[in-house]
Image 1 (cartoon, one colour):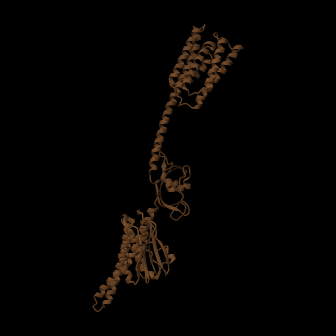
Image 2 (cartoon, one colour; image 1 turned 180 degrees about the vertical axis):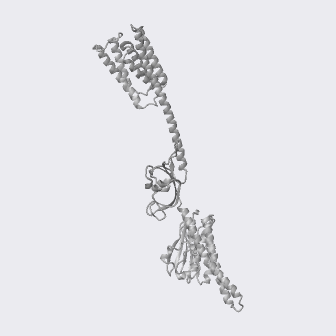
Length: 547
């Protein structure tokens, strides 16, 4: 026989434990009623046997109540003891056709609980044997009435055992099906959770009232929080605004939705003033079809969010870039077309002076150079965006700076400017992108020469510890405080008339800012109107990273 207690609750086991106390109490009451002649005594009854069996009933009750009900060896002794003492009580104290036969059902229940089907069968067979033995011991055992009484008692016990077995089988089947269904539900839920947690987009499931039921890890990343949002109202989780800045009531829109809705013009607020732009997709979760008709109700909503801040910014920058470039190209092309047309007209008149022809040609050439400069700036910007110059190499800074000096010394001399070098006696090699570093310094030097009418331009490279500081200083027209915040914007050109006197695309410093970011540094601008400007940045010697 084998114990199988795992399927039973503590309530059932406690019922069996306390029933062991009730039987001795009833047994004693029965003896008192016999002694006072309230009920008739059984012909086999003797007070000696009564006291002996009463002693064992008390012992078994104590063992039943205090012993470990899950101890297998103790249960063999305890259940066996109840059956043996119970059998002796029926044979020598009460007889089978008595109230004590009903208590045998407790024996049947205990045997089944602790020893399964085999325990139940043994208990019923033992009762059958006791019934037959009681008939043989009785003086009227051969009478039909005696047989009927004993058969009725046995039938009650046997029927109770069959009912217990039937109920147990039914409950076991239901429990097995319930466990299987629960395991399938858990498995499906786990699979679904794994799937949505591996999605990069935020996924939220709510009930029909907008209460969050399920969400994935990407949702917490998007919300920038570790606080669980389950059971929270969706309106308290997502703080949305439309393109005009008005609050967007998501629940109202969910309730109106009859199908999938996509919005890519919303903003989500985290705090003041931090916010991101999101693409929102939501759809109702429809209930299943009934056998007769389709239902219009739904069980909740599925909401998906995606951070499109960068994508929208790039899209707007692209549109603005195309618009501004188109505008900036239109002017020089118009001027070139006009100058060439003018030159063509002048060529048809032999009396036109050579100076007039040269002026028209010079005007066209100036605009062509302007376009070439714009193309060069755009090309540098494109290289930086595509990471063309990301290759790291060891740069000999003295050779590179002297090369830049040689490249720009002639143009500085033509404007009557002094081009100076200010280098540390010892400059360690630098591991970085040569293309980006040279392009950045060229932009600074070119701007300084362009906007300096008199004085000097100084290129410096100083080493302090493990850091190299680069700077280009000029004595030019300087930049006003209001313009200093804008000079790194694309296509920005100051309204200062002295700036307007020189040609420029407004892209040089914008490209410089992009190159500095790729090098992992930031440009520092110090300028004072009419006193010149200093553009500087620093790079660590051991840096090998190009963002």
